Image (cartoon, rainbow, N blue to C red):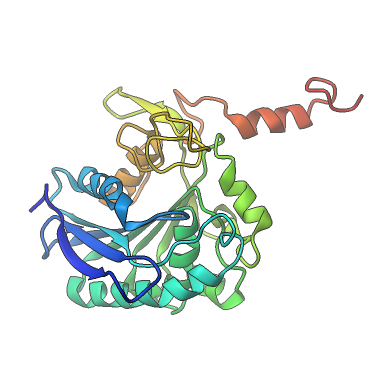
Length: 282
């Protein structure tokens, strides 16, 4: 059933947080996507990721899973690797089961923020990437600084890697800068396809929203900010590209193309490169 998620895992007692996974679409779908949330994600918020899962597969016959299967970090825990190290085995097990079920089908993993850190540990634990075909990161908090993991993610049998960070996203660059063990920007890896999330125009001429901050859904960088265009929110350029990647293997817009707007980090970079314009160099 497309409009109602099927509960495929639920554990109220085995971890610090309640964990669960909801499956949308047919169980025998040839193309399956797993959505992995980031920092501060709890099962109470699985509905928003469920909406993204439904929007991702609407009209395609594919399947998508909102996977809340690990204890996500809070602000204090996010710089460390502990939550990713604890959560990666559960995601590894889930993906191996998915690969066995999917057979020769396509497996996509779509990750937000610290979810990319956790997923990279899981997927990068084996040279074949656990059978994952496409590993998509949005607003990554940084991939693990582990040579074996990074080598597996760039090897000949690795999944294809995709990455975007909005120029309005304050927290993703901070997460990579301050992390203890997850400084690696996925956009810096060999073979990565970088796609845009700063606003654009779709194939049908529709206006696509820029992602206004770090939020996956209906927010920006801080809890009191409420703006449309989250990384995994229908109507944003980021989500448009994620859906295009899942269905075709390629982003749907060109980076910096029509409709792209200047963001926070663009303005900072421009100021730093122009002494005096923003008060620098006096």
